[in-house]
Length: 528
Ligand SMILES: Cc1ncc(C[n+]2csc(CCOP(=O)(O)OP(=O)(O)O)c2C)c(N)n1
Ligand SMILES: [Mg+2]
Image (cartoon, rainbow, N blue to C red; front, side, top):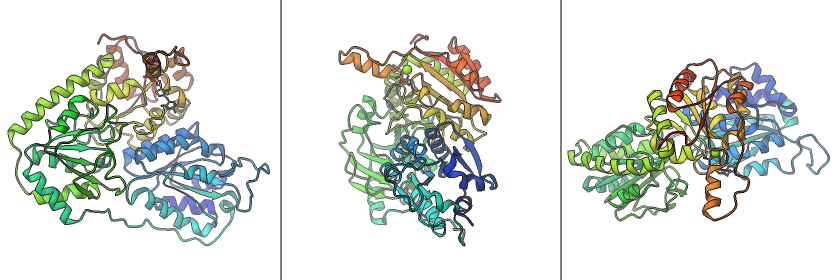
């Protein structure tokens, strides 16, 4: 079979059921076989959209998302999305052609020639591998799936030279490598369990690394009577209406105070990074237990007293077993309620500008809804800690890398992964323009995604930061297009929202529509 067929058949053998792609001359040898396969193809309109959609798909499905693009500019167009996936530990596979095997890449004018395409991608992902023969493709795909899923989830790249795509060889279709997740040594687990058993004021912090350990997080919290604070990526891992949930406002002063008052703090799958703790790192007076699958990660930002290098679910299962039966005291739930109301007061103040809109969204959405956000104030000051969510990986947000334009294509990937769940995108008027073309992709795929654009006439946060430093505003006041009309022109419905009640009505309609709906909301219309 040809290199193109080998690639497609090996992907299918690894469970790939959809790719987010854009065809071009150099990847025709892949598209030829994709069309004949059982793998679906969702067309994006810009390659960063392919990458963000693959990311949203991966976060929601729990399986690697695959982006397929052509060479050169198409590959470079994906880089911001791969950087985001790396930063948030999301398994995304980029497939692309590369220059022919014997092409010197010395400026001799080959279409899409890049000085060193593979090195450019390698600088951003876990590994970029350029295969050099058809027979190698099966192993390369298996290795890519190992790199993406064996330990910490990671983005990877496979580059197939154009000539290899069309060459033929005998190829065996690879099988997925059976993977065992790492688990911590018994000695360390016992130390952690003893500390927790003796703790009078335990606390749990949950990051994105705990997204497959939601039942265990809940059981541990209930067993210990320990309240749970999540990072942005951990949002919803413990349902946010649970009496022990303190929500996703890790950066708030009250959350930092709660952390400091714990005698044992257990952190599961979080780097405790400054993109979550933007008011400064936490100070810990108690003992710190960390669980992380990545031994290179387990000490960053806070050295643990006990380090459990392990898959989160496995470590928590072991701790629960060691702790045995028992139940938390009633007073611990009462204590959690006190902290929850303090944190909620700070959260509400931070999100006051969007209070009524967020309340409306919360009333309309189902319990298992997914919200895809962007680096807009309505998301990081508003939704993150003010909109309760109830499922792990239900808040798709570009946390560490902080890219703009993530929310809309990520929502597309999420809706493809979970067509029966509600998926809503919320973006600022600045961020939405980075990937606005993906409205056409969502419309073509007939996805019932409400796209809420919150308009404050430009780059609000940057305008604010310029003013705070006493600078004259430059490049931040941006006249908005009529976003509802833009939506309609690209095949969506489009509505200009007049009040929070109107938002509720239109959001409810958009969730069951035959296509996406742009909901253009003016910021600051509602009283705080
Ligand atoms: C790809 C990218 N380019 C630039 C930035 C810098 N940046 C951060 S926030 C922001 C403003 C975004 O405007 P908008 O989406 O309307 O949100 P608002 O700040 O108004 O709430 C900009 C330009 C970024 N985060 N990502
Ligand atoms: Mg704005």
